[in-house]
Amino acid sequence: MSSPMDRLAAAVEAVLPEALELSHRVHANPEIAFEERQASAWTAELLEKHGFDIDRKAGGLETAFVARWHGRAAGHVVAFAGEYDALPEVGHGCGHNLMCSSSAGAAIATAGLLGRDFDGEIRFIGTPAEEAGNGKVHLINAGVFDDIDVCLQIHPSDNTSSEILCLAITEVGVTFHGKLAHASADPWLGKNALDAIVLLYTMISQWRQHLKPGERVHGIITHGGAAPNIVPDETSGRWYVRSPIDEDLEPMIERVRSMADAAAAATGCTAEIVEDPVTRCRTMLNNPTLLEIWRRQLADAGVTDGPVDPNAGSTDMTNVSHELPTIHPYLAIAPRGTPGHSREFAAHAGGPDGDEMLPKAISILAASAVELLSSPELVERAWTELREQGGGGRRER
Image (cartoon, rainbow, N blue to C red; front, side, top):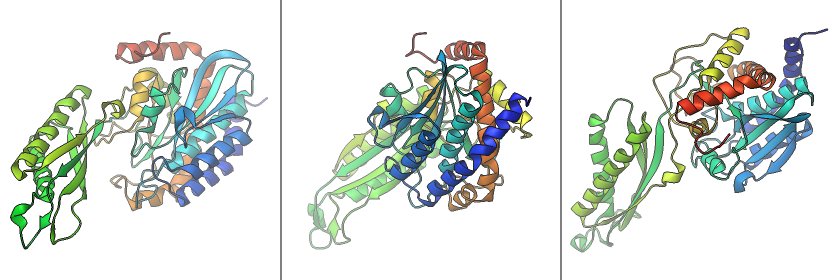
């Protein structure tokens, strides 16, 4: 009789062609945040084909869905998250085509190995708008993650690292309102909103020298006026504000507000500032038990774990990590130093390097899920650790 690992390997091998096809289709048809209609549908159709029950438009989001595979009785719910949104102009420069395909493949492989002969549930959460819009935060607030016990998802990278560092982040939008005038005939009658946005951009740039280690502020001017011969009466910009400490985000936001008000006062304009605390992303809570399981499965797959990458971005998966035990490890698909969010990285995500990583990701994800579903005490231990880290507060267990 074949061993469980042999049967899991066979289940991974069986689903791999369809997972590769999904990855390639999503990569070739990039869709930005909240517009991932094809990617969402293709991923849901694959899971439905393999016997998963599908709930579409999860949490009221058009391109979110939940896929469920029930065991013989109630037990722990182990979920795979899957992202599929792309970046404007760059396409899949963050490799999300590999994230939806690896998680869907892992869910199918886990179900293929266990059948219905287990207590609990295998779940897939199709999560839109990670790059802009923080889809998982909306899904958390809508209760989509409420009954999930553990959540797993990998992320393609230029390095392999089980433990990750993520910065808390929020978006600050600023619009300046001035007064129109002819830029040559009577400019003194105008109030130049472009001057205001340029002043703000300059102040933020000068502020960077004084940021604490790990803090980041970066942005773009999204509207600078209509024509050179018109004193602009409205301009706007968007900034991302990031910190390695959740509590330090608020004073950074207030600093941007004060600079926007100063730029408005200097130019005679008014400033309209928008920032939504509800959709902020947090820092990552790395769960020791899940890291232990992942590193063991990583080693069994012959993959070498690397150190924590100090060069951090942000993700809405971090908010999930504060609600329930979560793991979001990096798996390398590109040479070290390949910039993320680039066309170069997108080429790796859709090429041989991404294809080579996909079966490893499916196998390690599935093996980790099988271990968690087979050993309920590991899930309980992970929850104890989460509470010790200050997470899990919304849920009573």
